[in-house]
Length: 339
Image (cartoon, rainbow, N blue to C red; front, side, top):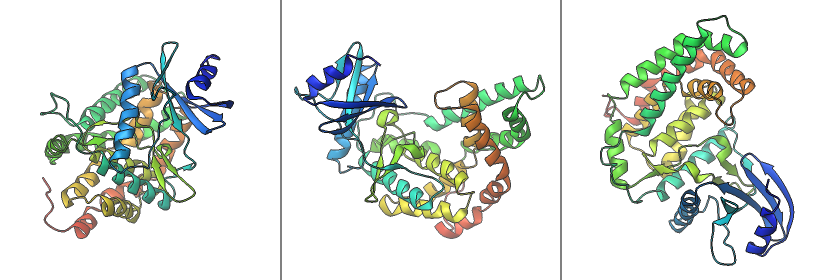
């Protein structure tokens, strides 16, 4: 931590800083003007884009997100020592818990409100024939997983995480390969074309810690760094995949979360069916395994081992959920596109 940063912030923002506490990749700063969150960027363009995005979302009616402070010159990006800092008002609230259906529904509602506001943005040139990002991401994770498994096969398991991977590899590979083949049979490219036409943005990191639930019950969606032009269905698939594990693959939990989203931003029958189909991809396992073996930030061997063991324990519940396709048809009607 650069000790000169905070005196400079005091001058630029006309405040007195009483304390600083690092957390993840930000600083929580206690000032005489309230609690702020300070975040640094190496790229000024990125910092400016994020602050402008938050402002545009608020102008479009989505206030359940971060709010940036301006310095005495009216700037929301503060350059200092080669870095570019943003100052956000801290949001009073707790992180959402996907084991709580109440929290899941709050998160789904907040996501739908974000999606309503995140439309009509300019589409970058060259996206007219854009391949859905989720396909690239999933293919990359599967390739990396194959490489990891190939290395593990050359020796005996060295620890619990390797033992668990070897027990799960056959089922994980089967599901992943089936989904990647199915992706070309569902109207995914049509959904992407529609997203380009509407100029939609997706958050693309709807982990539970990016939803904050205030004492009032309002749910805030934070950390806009990952937002980009994309079809918004990727967010819904990600949210459902993460929450279903902690909801023990309960079909009713899935439908309640879908209904909470649908009440704010209606989904077509085909979109609901597509979400269900894409949940067959074992993203929790592949994300966590590749995350820890490729040493990505935020992944630990202990945490990944616990998640893998939970997935393995619930594998029969997951299989039963994935076989409940008929219940989906009963809920959304018989005319849904099925490839």
